[in-house]
Image (cartoon, one colour):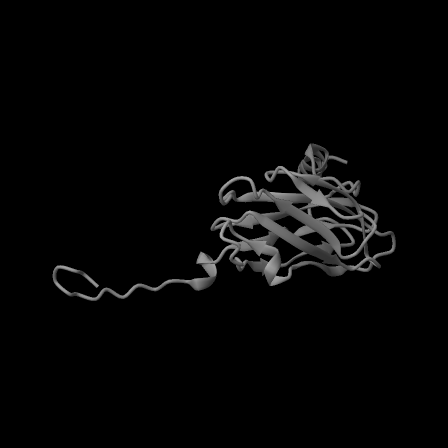
Length: 178
């Protein structure tokens, strides 16, 4: 509402787009592959602590490692435990509004894993994400998945990698070379 003329202007606001988010990356891999998945923070309104549980199907995926990215002082629970615990805190400073990758997880897709999508989800207790006033801060969780495929589109030579060798083989084929 304009304070001068009193005119009311209506705006469409997408509440989901404006909400802070914890986003799990989507990836594609084959059985036996190792794949990195990032868990990122988006539209961070300001927090001083966060404790998350990362859930995945341990019959399909094996968590091999985790690494800190954009949030210093991130710590982890035991790598063999599912759900996997990720915590971050900086209670000495004011609210941190950093957006970016909280953690990068490296999974191995188990041999013999069936084709299809295997989810990676994040959960948290509402009291485990809060700001410097010790007020809980809600984050929408956007789950991700690893799409397990029998073959990777574009992998002409079947080595599990997309590179110039695939391009060269395709070009040779299209040009009639053997």
